Image (tube, rainbow, N blue to C red; front, side):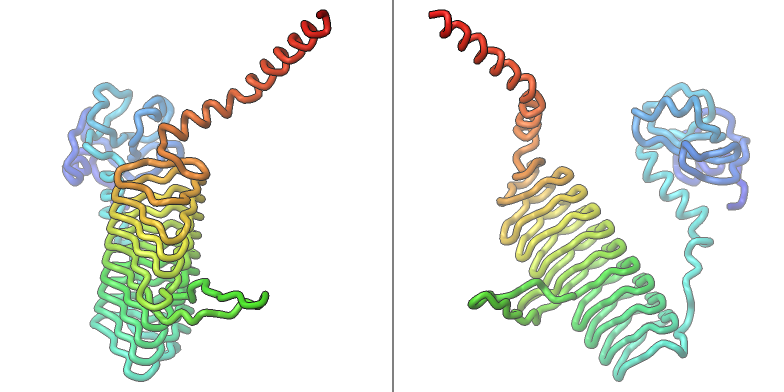
Length: 344
């Protein structure tokens, strides 16, 4: 990045500078890896001790930090401020996406490309696909017939988008993900599993980001829907006919079974699982490795397997941790009782 005075960076992100503003910042980095000349950030107060040990020249902090051994920029949200700064300072270097349509891409009949679309070599785009303005599709990706992709989308290498899938604007899909794979539907008759056709589709709304190796199954009849602004981590499984609300967060290795509905702002932590045909209300947080087996009302954090309201789950876990001690106590009482009985 181009070196900039610290006071210029503070102005750029709308923060309050405390300390020398003429320090020249030559890079941005994590607090443990930072070196002299770097600007870093602390978003969580439990890491404030790192202010003493970091080699960074300056730190973006919250407004709670009043005194520090080096210059700081106070902000309301240090993590967000740092992210915006990284996008502003490093974005142009990191966003050198391909331009133009490669002659090695395979185009079907009736394909319609918007202005400024980029398609890399060995991409296959089937018949009657529509792709919006400035969308970029990297090498070895596949777009099935009659699919629709909006403006300013970014499809990384080796993404498979099956037929009749609808993708909104500003959607990012990372490598290895499959959108519109068949839902897992079989009817078992006399020990033989007969496949149930999955003839629905998937709708990805605007501003969704989908991590690497995510699978989103098409609906059996209607549509699987990923709500606007939802962010999906790597290795997430979303089954047929699932509908998520807006701005959900689905963390790595979480899974949602078929026909389940998520409200707005739902968080599924890592390796959590949700059974099918239930509803999870707005603003619910599901803890890591939780197993949700029944519907959850809005604004209720849950944890455990089966998942329970967080306060109850914590009490049960605390009791479970005391179980070895309780077992020893009961065993000691049993022996004393046997000895007493033997003396009678």
